[in-house]
Amino acid sequence: MIADLPESADVFMEWSWSELEPVYADLHTRDLTADTVQSWLLDWSRLSRVVSEIGARLYVALTRDTTDQAAEQRYFTFVEVIQPAAAAAEQTLKERLLASGLQPAGLEVGLRNLRAEAALFRQENLPLLAEENKLVAQHDKLIGAQTVTWEGVEIALPQLRPVLAGPDRAQRERAWTLMHQRQLASRDQLNALWQEMLALRGRIAANAGYDNYRDYVWQASQRFDYTPDDCLQFHQAIEQVAVPAATRVYERHRQRLGLETLRPWDLSDGWFGRPAAPVGTAVLRPFQETGELTTKSGAILWRVDPQLGEYFETMVAEHLLDLDNRTGKAPGGYCSYFAATRRPFIFMNSVGVHDDVQTMLHEAGHAFHSFEIAPLPYYQQGNVPTEFSEVASMAMELLAAPYLPASAGGFYSETDAARARVDHLESMLLFWPFMAVVDAFQHWVYSHPAEAVLPERCDTQWQATWRRFMPAIDWSGRDDELVTGWQRKLHIFQAPFYYVEYGLAALGATQVWRNALSDQAQSVARYRQALALGGTERLPRLYATAGATFAFDAETLGQAVTLIEATIAEHDSA
Image 1 (tube, rainbow, N blue to C red):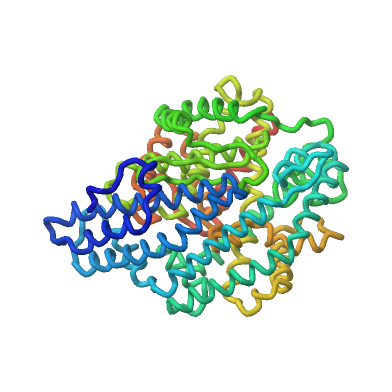
Image 2: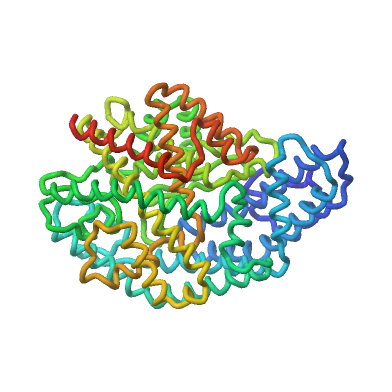
């Protein structure tokens, strides 16, 4: 019975499927009429939130320490036992609601999504999806184990980021080479894992009746408001508008650095990001320890909006942040959502560079989204399209930017704050071409699976796609490092096709920021209003509520690029 569901995470985290199953069975047998549908949906939502939170907390525990075998086993038990059984039980409830013909208020978009999920469901895919989760965990473990010895100390690869951003070119090249040697040492393991993942995803798509995994993902991701062809149009717009802008950024920095060509170790991330600082320019060091990152981020967020500041204070008080990098911790950063207790959790790998500040603000935007949707009564209403959830995070980076100076509670002098803003805006221009590489590569992979299962063909395709969108960087003599770039992109392994969302959202976020330049308070109010809609509206409406247009064309992208370049010029001349 629903009444038996515990309220405390400490209790329901210990529940097994044998305790959850009777609650699903009770919902399945209860009367479902116009008079009872609201209470039935509320109870179903409560149960779904509990199962979701169990999985989220177990995944967080695993990523916080990938060497913790007990945490790994608890997570595997969830994905092998509870998650498939819960998915099957959820399917019966979806089918029951859809068969009833009832149209509960506020669930119009949710019902559309439920119809798509019900149509996609296949019992035979449940163990395959569980296996996919296990392969993702293997990838985390493989990447998390990559360490090098630097200056006599064994460190995780992300801890080389400050060196790559530094002014000493010889040291950058040495660190870059060491890092890539370690990554290439995992090449065969990653190739084998990739082949296993690709074959598994092909079986999942075929079981669901799709000719290829791309079409399956479009349905599974509920992309009802745009098509693969729209993505290809976006790639062309990026090639037309953003690639020349990115090339201008690279050329300015090549001249400042006094180099004949820009090499990958001349970039602050050793890959596609902003060029490293010229000699004599200190690396931006916004904080010394994570407590300072937390305190100053909180001060900035209060300036953006007091309610957002209160949300962040709640996360600090309730220990919902894990920020520092350490050996054994999974790579990357994310914001999870504990759906039953209605709280977000931020995970990242900070090492004391400006990117950490950007990551904090980015993930805080996701966290605020979680807080804003918490009052929605039905679990299905919280299913926000990722194309808009990333607007929440990217817009927060831009809305918070005016408060980076210490005078506003932030991290920097006025001069360094201006430099940080230029860094961020230049990074946006550089991101669109890189996003296009990742997305275009994945379109090729899943529309050419017979070729993509061969790692050497992936190498060739990645190189060709890279040269289309990233012509300004000289990789000569570093062919192995270039062609295996796809192995270093976490999303390609762990979240297929989850990358174009960032490019679309960056365009939406730029429009939110554009509005804030003339009326900050009104822009933030519209932003929060859009977040509070959760997944109750379609993508174009979510964007419009936030003051933006959901678009793929060169004209809209060109307006954003023009604003960014003008702002860069303004701060560069200050």
